[in-house]
Amino acid sequence: MRTDILEHEGLTLGLLTAGDPARPAIVLLHGWPHDKQLYAPVVDTLAAAGHWVLAFDLPAIGDSRGAPPSAEKAVLADILIGAAERAGARAMVVAGLDVGGMIAYAAARDHGQRIAGAVVMNTVVPAIDPWDTVLADPRIWHFAFHALPELPELLVAGHQRAYFDFFTNFLAGKKEAVTDDYRAAFARAYERPEALKAGFDWYRALQADARHNSRHKAIETPMLYLRGDADGRSPEDYLPSLKAMGAKHLKGEVLRGSGEFAPLEVPEAFTRAITSFAKECQAG
Image 1 (spheres, rainbow, N blue to C red):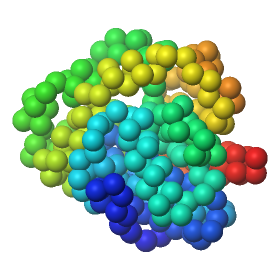
Image 2 (tube, one colour):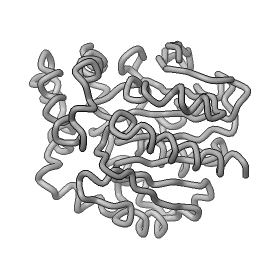
Image 3 (cartoon, rainbow, N blue to C red):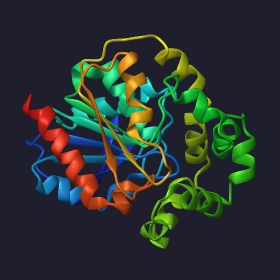
């Protein structure tokens, strides 16, 4: 595994890479509040299974620099697929967790002809059930707070570690797996004002994402909905509505005992699920 930098469309994108660029690609996308280090335990294992692996810092986060033109997930998917294409990625499977999962869905929905498959992990997709139920859950209060203009930056700046630790402890099934080193790395990734704003902008764009996703569209790209079961939710809570909104080739899988940090909490199960699905997609 090595740290690399890609220049694409005026942006600098940091990433972890491993494997042979001639191999089919797996593109890994983090969410909030993480960075590319979320995937550090699994990058080499995925590469050893016969893939070229690219784990990106989302625009403006961590080692990435430059603000994207929009935080809408279809736009971010276009940017990240384009960066991987520029690097030579082929037959790519885009796998994302949390906000990265929303981007992976957008990759399948809006850029499906450019990828071999998509893995949507531990997230609800804007406008698609159980979207309204999740928004109404008082435990998900931060979606509304983060969407406010300016106030989240004002209150969180300088307190990233403490604020992020609250969510890590809430979202992780195995809190001990998210070690102090990882927690410190995630906080550092959002230290710069531009990075903190970029993270909150993902939430500010959710209404636009929901309007976009509310239009039915046939999705031919194979898709895996992957979810840890630590929060009591199941893929079966998500699959019917994803199918109803157009996903034609969709299946679900559970990562037992995991919360929202699956690459850290259950790296072996995570790697098996991603590798198995990617090989199905890339063989097609």
